[in-house]
Image 1 (cartoon, one colour):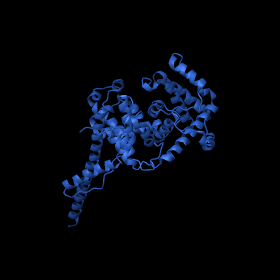
Image 2: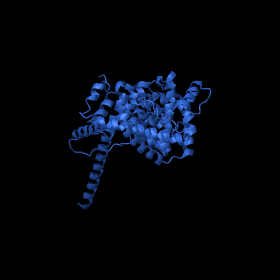
Image 3: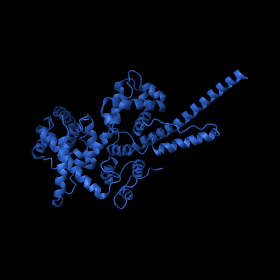
Image 4: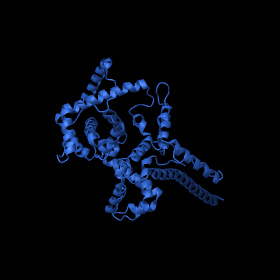
Length: 425
């Protein structure tokens, strides 16, 4: 059957009550997942809820106040690092990149932290008193944050190397849009300054670029990606990366032991080649618009092993097994590994889809060539179908394994009981 339509404006509006509260968070997440993403016309509005910029229970009036507060606070945060490191206004750009070099020079001469891209808040004179109060609060907050100038200098140095490498083939950065790279840089520096535990990690530029392109607002992109980064903070550290790769390896072993054994041979170095896929949310493996839809699907967290959907699937399999065993065996609901997030099933689906190609790879060079060959070629619908099959297959397998284990334990107990009886009678 054809997939259901993407979440559109009409359906989205029906989710709100008279005061503007989004009544059922789970329903929104389900619609995003089942529809295969969001209609581009409402993407900005949906993302502000999906990524935590607005609470689901907030009213229309509360969101207007929150938008103003976000605007003022971001402006003060940006003022703070500019005041600490005035030279940071100047981006280090290779002069051979003439287009960006000229834009960076012009931006440095004309930019003002007060002029923020995508300004959509009410800054009218009637709100002067309220804005002055918010500015005072925001300044106190910004001034209280400890910023290590040396570490921030280093972060800016890396940011200035990475920003020009952002996907400039995108229409958003073409022609006059190249100035958006400067906006992207400001967001990254602000985040690094006020999140010293994370600071800047290579690859963040591509993640923030996605938010900036969709929201087309410096302030909204900053807050949405900040909330998103807080959730995936461990992914920016080596131990988080290693843990995720190990989980993917364990999951692949559950789904295809032969492919798992092949890829974990010494000369192939396991699934480390999947790191970029997982870190960037498969940003480059699909056509650009499909990659954005997949990012929405993964961020909906509708289908996870601790979700109601997974519970239903396991319970159905459990009852089916129970009936087949004629009521003799009835284990409790099996505990699946909730660390196997749906993104890991997407990754596994790609590996399973390209199984034959992977089995032919005999060294790391061939694996790298394989991953590079996938860029922009994968079909989202095929991968999603395969991932869902793997997900529900794993749910069912966890039930089957539970039954097998219980049957084995009962046989052992029964055998042990008979031996004791033989001893005493």
